[in-house]
Image (cartoon, rainbow, N blue to C red; front, side):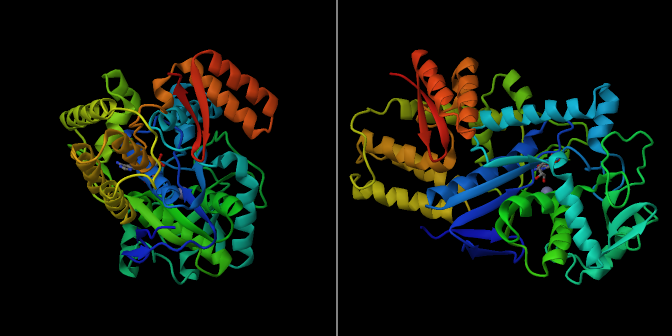
Length: 467
Ligand code: AMP
Ligand code: ZN
């Protein structure tokens, strides 16, 4: 296992990563499925994918969970506004379930076309209402909640460490009072665990609970689902930087109030993607989707390569000319790799000391809080090096692509194969998951009869074109 340092938002320091057990357990806050993911959201998933790939590349086993928020996320993070999914349903004349399904599928498509490794589990909030109720009951038993105006609130004054992640100061908490409109709250920073008194007369998603028919607040879902699948204490929790002051702060408060001890060891946050007018966001109404980029002729991997032009903890300004430059650089890179003479398949033990040195330099950048722009620099140096044989260079490219996930050897991207084959692969994955080996084998044969090879790798199944 190689040593990895990660910047932990909790300590505001780079720390040597030491997993709690032999499987690294990692939870990433997923999309709220009321609209397409914008490319800023996708930047966060790309950073999380690099983190996961880095861990796997360094020899760790990873258990990874991403949630799908399909209820309870209001238009304001402090419980103000209305439920995003309900609002979207009303505006489009669709049902809430149709909205959630449609945008979940759109998200999964983006995820796939960016060549992100699927998590062990995508879990939907609406499938885990009982786990949320159980957690709220525990908080109630321990005296952390109060009921006001029909809603169940978490009382932050009862939790002495409130705001540790965000380094919130008491005065700042008070300042929040001016913007908050919920008069039921004892402290403006208190947050809703369960709504029974909906602000909207015809709320559709509702469940029975000990406090009456209603629906959960947004933050409780991540605590309930992550602990359900990863255990009470786990290694890594990620999200975008905007989650620090409210969402992750509240997740920590409610989870640690129940546990009575530290919940998650490492908190990692990706910085924003910016537009000319500041942070890219859906609420501003001005946002770009991956589909829009594809319809303009870009490959999703052009955008991924563009994201690699900055460290994940730096802001990154998006513009089409900048994306053009990334596209050109990526295509040049692919051309140079495509021109390498193929021959013997090298193993790490067989490559020269020069190559080994390069790979170790690459690893040192990657393992140093995922310094991808620098690691990419090493890839260019390898390709330029006149001492290294082409076949060795090809080995190095494949080695580095374990972390970069750019399909540099052009063999394994599902988005470059026909949709029919990608669908068959997805179906085979499902059959395998259900342990229906017979059907999985039949589908593999069908794929092979169409000129493609299925490879099962530690990162999931991959397709290669038969040569
Ligand atoms: P949402 O679907 O709004 O819940 O957001 C999904 C993820 O994207 C969260 O981890 C957010 O923190 C992150 N995010 C939101 N806006 C941006 C942005 N402009 N740049 C990078 N990440 C973002
Ligand atoms: Zn979350």
